[in-house]
Amino acid sequence: MEQNDPTPSIRDAHTSLSGSLPFADTADFEAADRGFLGTLDDPAIRNAAGEVVWDASTYDFLDGDAPETVNPSLWRQSRLVAKHGLYEVVEGIYQARGFDLSVMSFIETDSGVIVVDPLIAAETAAAALALYRKHRGDRPIVAVIFSHSHIDHFGGVLGIVTPEEVEAGRVQIVAPEGFLEHAISENVYAGTAMSRRSGYMYGAALARGPQGQVGAGLGQTTSTGAPGIMVPTLEITTTGETHTFDGVEVEFQMAPGTEAPSEMHFHIPRYRALCMAENATHNLHNLLTLRGAVVRDPHVWSQYLTEAIERFGDDTDVVFASHHWPTWGNDEIKAFLGVQRDLYGYLHDQTLRMLNQGLNGAEIAETIELPPALAANWSTHGYYGSVSHNVKAIYQRYMGWFDGNPARLWPHPPKPLAERYVAAIGGVDRVVELAQQAYDDGDFRWAATLLDHAVFAEPENDSAKALYADTLEQLGYGSENGTWRNFFLSGATELREGNFGTPLSANAPAILAQLTPEQLFDAIAITVNGPKAWDLDLAFDITFRDLGRSFRLTLRKGVLIYVEKEPSGDAALHLTSTKARFLALVGGDTASEGLTVEGDPGVLAQLTSVLDPGDPGFNIVLP
Image (cartoon, rainbow, N blue to C red; front, side):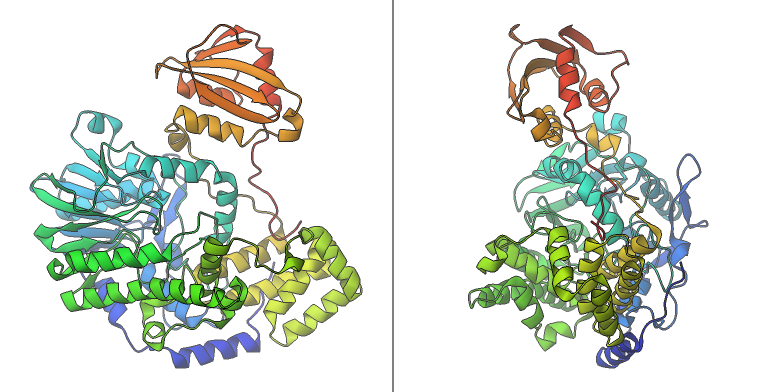
């Protein structure tokens, strides 16, 4: 459907913003271009079937001044992040940037190379490695470091090393304590809902261009290739822990509970270089990502940045992360890390101050202002996280969803609430009339609130949906935050064109294959339809012959419980299987070989009959 131009209020806001920020400062552009060695001859990266999983050239439109449909500050950030190629950080450290959401780094050792954070997909990681080797020679990989437990920092590992190389001890897989548990649980337990919302967050279904997806602030978007995972062979547990890889010493700093529940920084004395994982990037990060996650802790985040400055600051000439571009110079590094530290510390402390004065999360988000010294720094801008939703996350972390007002303790859910609001206002036509007035006045937030109620009360009302789409579009045009823009424009797209489902999925077979039996049973338990299972009383044993482990599973009162124990013979069913075959069984494959069934197979049929998998196409902007 045809899109709209920005309204005068959006154009005026962009003009005002352009005059208030230091756009003449080009230092970030110089830093982002520094050390460029070259890029891929063909920017389109394809999978084995020839399908494009990443194409950096789709962002070639990001040039020159910002168009009226994009916040000029976000346009600037997207121009920086869209740069792609191999870059020399210092002699001996290189980065492949612009080939996925994240950045892949190469640290040269005596005769090989350490790879840091191999992107999301095997295809993009393989392309980045090939580019590195084109410029630096065919050095063997001696270690892969996963800085933390998010998929854009480990998913491409199978594109650069094989399980056989790891099993033979030729390659070490290095990760912080708790990596595997958190990497698996985040992508499986709430994976369906997170993936659906990720499609909004990264604008996966949006056309790329000035009226569509221009980036996500932290990176441009996510690749669509094949993600995988490898079990760490070396788990880092302690700050100060030091390991040597083919002659290169690396000192680690633990930073759990920051940007990821399992995360670490590390220092390389040979190169006087410090890697900050994802805790010091050139924007304000998320404390609660819009796709959904556990709320992160800005207080410890700030403290770990202080510890990094104190521990490594005097011995560091370059700091780099797994997103964006490096910072060079000892004084500049201390200033950059200090600004990032102060940013998260300020948001934490001021939110706590104001909530203790009785303000709720939404009120704090509207009230709080960053100090001028922080607001003037480009690296504090909310291109990925935002002050608004981060402050609400801090409130949620300490106080929960309830703001203390008893009228908000037990509200109606969205659809019946919307029906009541619409009736009180005078019907959907009146709501749309008021929303149109708000739209014309440039009050798009109020228009969106009204139209949200209108479409939840009458989902098939075309005039309400059309105006709602137009309203979300204007909110997207005005947003400095890349993920907010993508959410607004994705909502507009679905209102106009219908539900686009889940273009992105982290629930990849290679990741599912790493589930422990306990995690596998947990993943099954959360799909049990409780009411359907209320009256079932099932018990069966399962033996994983490849693991040498057995479990008793029971389903009673709608709850699946598992206990590790040897089969006792009193269960109605005993299954013997490999873990992989059981995964296939749970996925619906009852016919393939490799499954031994002793006893009543009807028990299994009863179990599978009450499993209710997630819906990757659940509605978001409609009820």
